[in-house]
Amino acid sequence: MVESPSREVFIFFHVPKTGGISINHLLNEKLSRGIDFIDLGLAGQEDDAEHGRLSIEKRSREERAKVRVITGHDVFMRTERLFPDRIARRITFLRSPASRIVSAFNYETSDAAPFTRWDEQTPFETWYRYQERDVMTKFLAKRVISHRLGIALAQGQRFARYPLHLGSGGWVFSQVQKALKDFWFVGCTESLSADMPIIARRIGIEGEVEKRNATGRNFSRRLDLTPELESRLAADNRYDTRLYEYWKQRVPAQIEKITAEPAATD
Image (cartoon, rainbow, N blue to C red; front, side, top):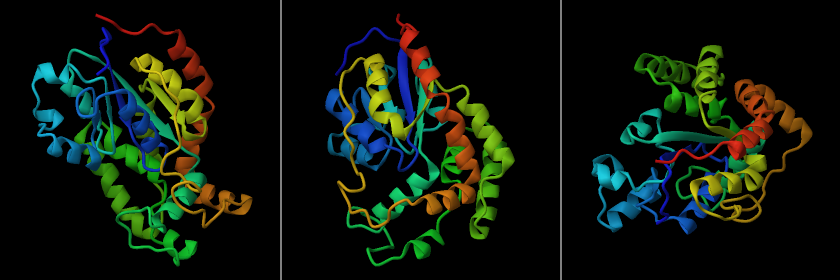
């Protein structure tokens, strides 16, 4: 476990297929899983059960005070309420929508995917017909919109648009953007290997990010991203594309800011 006088707690909102497993691997190597590194996902739940730990919500204030980092698909804005005396540093990573979609296809039609209806014989067009549009925007909407009515509206739009192959809509996009502007860092998967070590040092650890669960390493590359396919997927997922392009341009300034900013200590 990393001992640190910092009052900061780092909360990663893990969007699927944006490098979260690679981040978790680094954190799992350098921190104590289930103690100062909490994984709010299936792997974390299984590890807690194996070691007889309570879920983080049920732990004492003293136990929660040991936590340095929380990650996972089940991270929400309310997660930081578990640490009322700490400064929450919200972090997420986005990815080029076309690249994310092709990576998801290669993964979900491989033996590496534990729960999938697809196999290596599935054509891309068949798989894509069943995929939501603007997955990143919709995923974040459920997690970063803070008021219940807003979440209900976002989810209602999602379910209405899904069978019609429509994206998130302008209102949902604006709510996500508004929330992300209060995040400590919004990065991009494409620069993860350069940016995550800087964030790691702020957490109090050192280490490089190794690609995990990656196309060409953990499963085969059945489909390559051509310029034509990229253009099509970007148009189909226009709010994800807007979200990604907006934050991609701002990564260098964010890195400069957090590098110069002193850590909050007791």
